[in-house]
Image: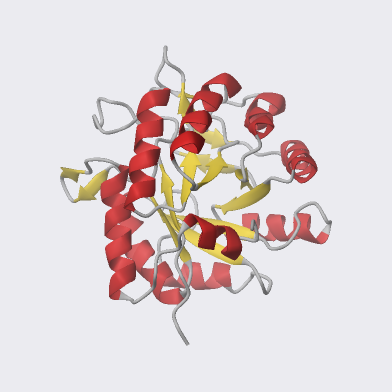
Length: 275
């Protein structure tokens, strides 16, 4: 039996990395869109999209800024758009502001399934916010990517599914390697995957230097992979990545070594239940 295709997600910019840390980080809508196009050309079937405030350079949930990026990416590519609803960890934005990008009708949006301490401060995702996000996504037909930083968040997502707030098929994005969340280890990933209902899909984020090892592990286990400057600004130790495309290209090569074909956007839609 042929190995299953792998969906590669590119997380383009996040909300906090600055130009002082790396000149490759995209800040303006034009820069973010250009990075999204380059990642798509390199093999990313999904782009995870944050946008930035022009005045501060930090993340924003301004729907008009999202619209600039979304319109540009839709005009130039056929890859799936997954828009963030996370806002900025450490700053508790109003629920309406956080879910506003769903009005642009992306195929996917993020669902951070609980509250966790982050280096930047407390990342708050209260039940009231999750309820509102799940309801709005269900009404608009937007599939939620279930971002889970620990096993408690996996259980929360499963409870929302049992309560008919998150329809199948479920797609999980396991975040590993943060200071307070799941460690970037095989044991942690196996424990998380073992909790998933049949028919679910899953992908792995390895933060910082754990990005490549966790990508390799996910590829070997039959999962999917997220890479990108939001999660890791280095290509290797002491060497900054030139852009998102370089990180995607490495994931493509790793998939090739394991004889896993890289999913086209059309194949990714089928695997995620979007087709």
